[in-house]
Length: 217
Image (cartoon, rainbow, N blue to C red):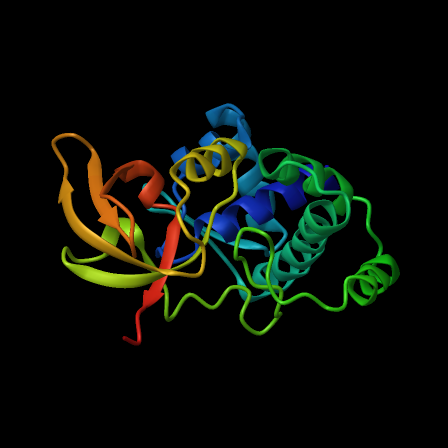
């Protein structure tokens, strides 16, 4: 039960980033479980004081839930760094392996791992490892919400294996300015480019989980 609880808290924390609430549909998609399972688990999390549930509008973390989710994300992202930097695992394989590893880490092992890795500040997918910034989305905008003809910094993204593979294929430059040219809702696409690169069509559903910051240029 504890492992499942932690899995849900991580999913809710990640999907709640830069949006007001997490829908049951989102949790079902990323947890790959039935609607009944989501209802049961979110009810359990609410009774434990980890989340707020509102019928028809979705789920958010409580202050208590944010604290625990932050701890889980630090462990998870440290494992991502280890697998990427030390073991050179292909990026699409890292999220699943990192979560399996993180689920068994003790606080002492987490501290030792952070020291071994020289206290990294970000995961291979751009997610913060700074506890004070981890869930701070005040300066973040989903790429799907960026106005056309705007340049933004590609900060990080929700690292599902399919998403990692997709963005690797597009060679989208993490941490670099990208220019949103326009959206085409009819085709569920948006069009972007960046320095010395031709225009790329990006799936609008994927853009909903790409987080950007305003460019200072």
